[in-house]
Image (cartoon, rainbow, N blue to C red; front, side, top):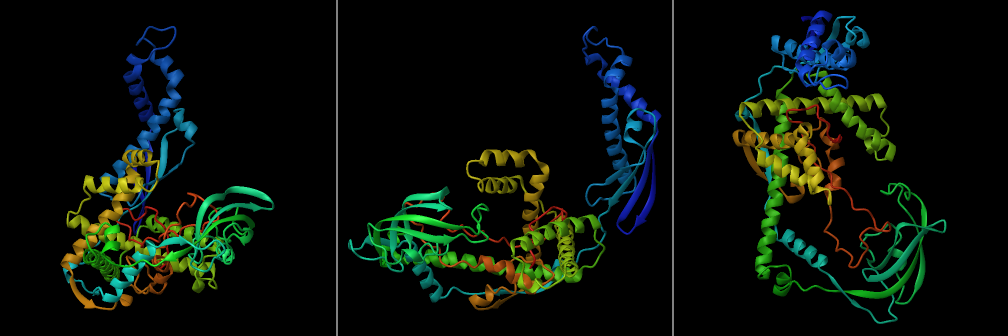
Length: 508
């Protein structure tokens, strides 16, 4: 086996590797001798099949396996002999025809290209200085949280038989939806409670119930949103034949000890204390996210080194895939709509480079600090992932348990968060009291690692949700008339260890 380095430009290395056909044939003969005692073929006694016959019958497939194993062995030898730490899997290119090599007519000759990990000294976390915004829970927040709880527990009582439905009333209906006169799947329900003005159903549905009374029959004409989750319904006009069964008015919820007991608390004081604790936890988490963002900004400013091209390309491709999906869905940010594709690619490539750089820095700092992800931490992450797929928990858990690469995708964010916590412990962190609005301001998004701070608000806007709306009682489990729940936007994270691992590409 001969290994020759032919290129070494920055982090990009290429090797020419040659394994003589004679060596491959020797390996084949050794393999045949190894399996010969176990081979059983018709017409021969067990273990007595001639080597020549085994070679004639199975030599081609066995040589294919030998060639594949030899390429892996040769690549590992090249990396080890040159003390190379690869940034991802090497790429191979055969110089001879594969069939000729497998047939033993040609030497195994191939190029191996590999990007190597950069060598750099990470900054000392103790030398970093940041400000961490903090805020106190106010009485106004507490009262608002109380009101939201009361709204979520709101009850309704029947109005008089001839009373008409008004805004905020609940209307109990049966309905059947149709498009072009044909009913469609998920478009029917019985005893569905619709709260007018709650915004739980598609636009126009609830508003057309204003003025109905028990016993009325009405046809509601609506148009499904263009971005509706069911592609076969998106943008289409539909009609819903509705039968009104009851009209109910909301009953004011009195916030007192009895209300607190309904929620499992001993008293209103205990409920208030629980709310304060919850709000304090939310503020603390947000403060930590803001501190993380500033730590990442500081780390990015203090490091400038060559990046493995394959890692940057993988990260950029993941980001650009999401951008193209946004363009197709008409969801491209306003500030980007008038930009050329070349300009957008340049901006997003800068973001990809930042992510990869921060991932490598966090990985290096974490390794120096001997940070690891414990088996129980990974197990909790796998369990949490499995719980996202009701009814398939066992299959999802087994998939992760048997798939090291999938485990690595779960391990990376855990490692990252532990590395950030380690840095925050050592860095000079000054708490600065701010208002709640300032703490949750969009211009400094939680966990954002973007190169463009101004765009952080684009993804965090989706995180601002109003008080949770009460679930309609007796509503169908799956009804297309209902507005689909908005997906929560996860804060972006710098890739830890394996920066090439694909993540959701979000421009900040």
